[in-house]
Image 1: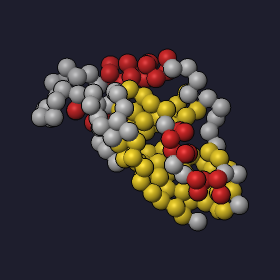
Image 2 (image 1 turned 180 degrees about the horizontal axis):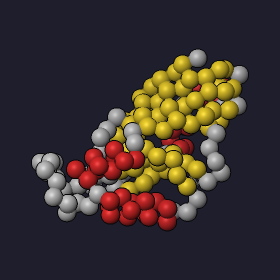
Image 3 (image 1 turned 135 degrees about the vertical axis):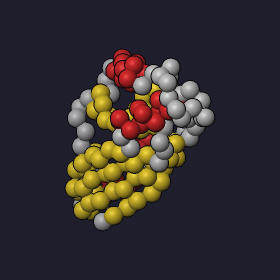
Length: 140
């Protein structure tokens, strides 16, 4: 069985935002999958997706700080026409990645106890973000 749809996520401030619940709530079809995979792909080049710890909010702060150190706004970028946060956002997006894949078992995502799916918003004013979600699996 295959199912695919696009989900719009509301605008979020710059940083790391846990979106696991938003994804699961938008996919009632997930409950019918006995075994399978969920693939989540972000349709933007200045935001990204990752799986990371969902217990301590300090992790989100440290991830943002670390990426800002790796791709600072004051680096002498050539592509500057969209503002000082744009090119660093592209670098961060490429480093983090545009998709995540999570196993499905008995109608639930198979994530570790401290894991969650994060939207990594790299722009100061990123706006609404779209993700395409694809479920591939066997119905129970």
